[in-house]
Image (tube, rainbow, N blue to C red; front, side, top):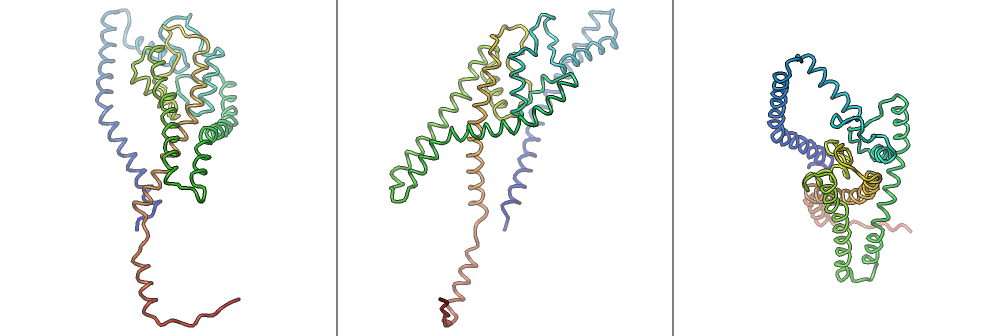
Length: 288
């Protein structure tokens, strides 16, 4: 009989292998195309500007890469807004304690790196406690309603649809506020497509945070000062809501797999019952 733990480990490994194969199938050819295209563009650049050699061009590319790693966008000029004004710093602090970590911006000074370590050391547990409390507040009405429906003596069949209705309202409202409407705003402000905005929304709220799409980083656009701060507040509430959804989904998946694969062996119980029926009744000892 397959145990629940063994089944979970096998399913986990299988899901990782499946993801690896699908991502390789979808992305490897595109990566090869862009790599060849980039090399071709470098050759064209050297042909147009004969005063440069390949070594000088590679040094320029290295400078651009170092600037990007330090959070400096190579596009534009020195008049680009700072990455470390209060609004952007507030947004960065939120990505640290929520463990999103986009990777497009990080402290470059030793003092900033050391502070980031201790800030995350205390901030991550604080964020988890805050999100846990916020999640309890979001789902408190559902817990109260469930207890009311399951109260002894109450017709649960009659009131069960009420619980499902409130659960549907909770999921629908959260989906609209945190997954459907925000991509419309990001598409308008950032110039992304709706699909790109939805991709950024989910990758952010699930704390995956690749960093390929980050709000407020286009040097050619003018953002209001509180844009990224408001985005950080949206992230906090979205994290609490999506965490509740993930918890419910995990519970449902666990119960489904346990019911599907971890079934009791009724043949043993039937054999034991038959054996008891065949044996003569033994005298019982009463213990007061």
